[in-house]
Image 1: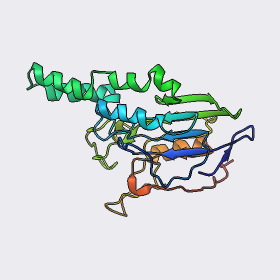
Image 2: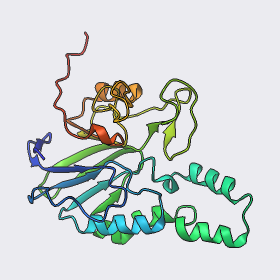
Image 3: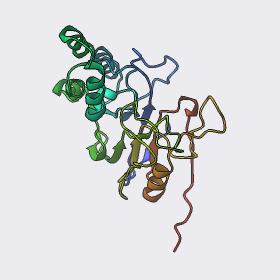
Image 4: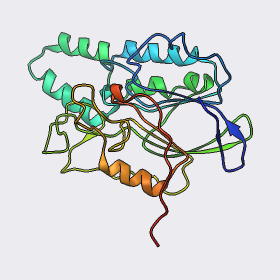
Length: 248
């Protein structure tokens, strides 16, 4: 967890995690050191169940750090209202009242999972759920942090070759595309998925890159000091890059 410098040259230390899928705790091998900002890059849960989100809140509360920034991922589909509504409609067509009530008991009603993550208690515990867009935070060390967040990834069944099918939350196909409106002032970019060509090789096939060219172009234009992402488990790690000079 190397420190980075903000615009005011105040050092800040980040802990970056992703795809914990409702894991009850962090690995014990992590170094015990003070952290200014904890970032989770999505896939908080495995099945987007209410019980998993409750575990997520306990997970973050146990981490020692003043600011915990969280975005959803493709597995956290109940946080994507349009996708969740479609799933409920498709599933509930042939179900009776009791079965529908059981679905709501397990997964929650529309917006219920979001209410957990955005509750006043979560904020008291330093947990901030970030919707897509730009956010600003004042750190305890006096630094000012500008963040752009986006949970959106290209559809896994699309492979960016065809139309694909939206089975998960916060996804888009090649024909739909997506605008990552990062701007030019973000210190840190947090996305669920990787940009094309950066830590995006899948475990199943070393020739397949799961990153998004649209995201790469947006990040290359914005040039943040730090870009955090997950989604591709085999691509875990860190990479130091140097931006080329912009053409005149």
